[in-house]
Image 1 (cartoon, rainbow, N blue to C red):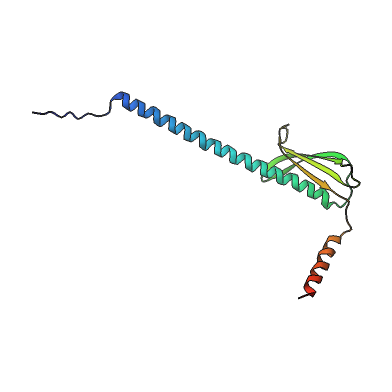
Image 2: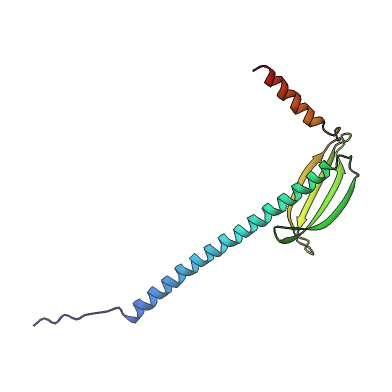
Length: 143
């Protein structure tokens, strides 16, 4: 008579399978954690870039020749607190100034993003609008 033995997994096989599963889950969790950190960092850098661009735009919209100086402040943006420092310097070209804006968290020396822009001599109010409307009338007259 032939006896067939029903064999299950041995304890060693079960332990090896658990170790492999644990290592795989650890790798998956590390990858998910890294992706979440990368997403948060990219969002923070994007917001910081927008804040820097907004500060340069504010200086341009003031429509005055800026003084060579450094200014700083804090702002709430996207429900978070941010600190900025704007450094206005000469470029060597008359009435053209370089603006460096560094954005960080309040109380931190780590700069999240630096944005660079240039401000030229202000034009007369409405001058650019007039140039656009003249072009529009010229192109509209040929139809």
